[in-house]
Amino acid sequence: MSVKVALGWVAVGSMVLVSCSDSDAPPLQASVVTSEVASKLPTSTTVAPPTSVATPPTTPAPDPCRGAPPPPPVPTETAPAALVAAVGDALFAPRWGALDVSGLVWVEGYGVVGSRAPDAALLPASNQKLFTAIGAHLLLAGDRRFTTEVRRIGSTLVLRAGGDPTLTTAGPHSLDALADQVRGAVGRGPVRVVVDAGYFEAATMAAGWQDWHVPTYVGPMSALIVDDNRIRTDADYVSDPARGNGERFADRLRRVGVAVDGPVEWRRDADGSGGTVVARLDSAPVDELLGDMLRRSDNEIAESLLREIGGGSTADGVGRIDTALGGWCLGLTGTSGDGSGLSRDDFRSAEEWVRLLQAASTQPWGDDLLAALPVAGRSGTLAGRLGGLGTAGNVWAKTGTIIGGQALSGYARTISGRAVVFSVIVNGEPGAVDGVTSALDGVVVAAVRNG
Image (cartoon, rainbow, N blue to C red; front, side, top):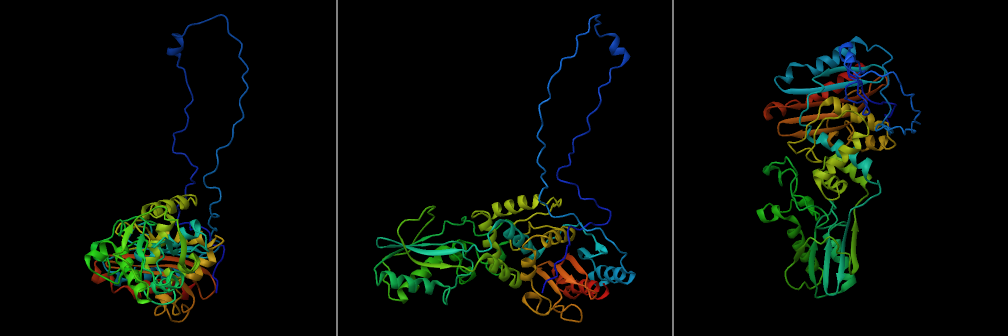
């Protein structure tokens, strides 16, 4: 079910979004000669005639905002007092206590119907995955897949990892499946096994992650991910999961009868393209992975997608998304350290999340983004939330929960059929934040039932 309408950008209060083409340079000043200065200038009875100089044609500077999403629709009606009051009561309810809250609710036709510190940049938790999803839609082909392959070079098998975040040990998309393909192609061996994990950068953590995040909340990152890289918690594995996963692959080969000669070797080979492919697995396409990431809030998928966008680098992935979004001319100032929302370097306000969601809704892939989100009372992380009258099946949003933070941003429909775009971000003491889920949901309920 689609809620896509011509949403456009959000106009917050009396704020005017400055065009990217505006200049901060001071205006040119006219040259004025005072009488005192003029009296000291040399005089001449002969005045040279002006020389005619052809002015070369000028090429207008390209508009950096060309191709940006359309401007926001102008509110055409006055929001009902009951709607404004209900949303305001929900955003300023006493149960928020001393927590930091950034919230904004926009309703089609009415504009902004309620806000609280809308420009306060807070930790967005897994709402950061919206940033990653939008970046993936902008910078990756929807049918792109992560590839894992095994190449035979003489008696050596080179396992070339391609960053697939969905590999498992057993099952149809697994090390077992790769081992079965190898057994069918090379027989019993013996073979040597080399693991090439150079497709992604060597760093196992993103900027702003805490040591205790890994592997409890996210597996240590690598180009060879198996079972979310959480199959072991010892220091050796956490510091270099690709090595451990390579040893597991060698073990799966032995199980199907392939003799492995010597220990598993490991290298970061930028080429590795020689030999013959004897086994290959492709992940689901990016479009499908985005749905898994958003609905299940999958951290490993988010981080792999960000590195894929960045040519293997998390920081480059963030930079490329920021550059792409700069062309939207939304005046974004939020920061990102990762793709999943665990980083303590992630900061963005509710106002910016609403701007991003509105702009995304006008893109050719806007309906795809909406369809990938959890649905209230129906799917993903919203399956058990917002299941009441008016909201069940009628809210599409990304949840977010970290220690000291919660968030909820997305789309909805009012009971009268108006489109809603909203974002509420909450930060504070962990014990206090843990109890505000119903307050978050209450903001959406207020907008849907009174609009």
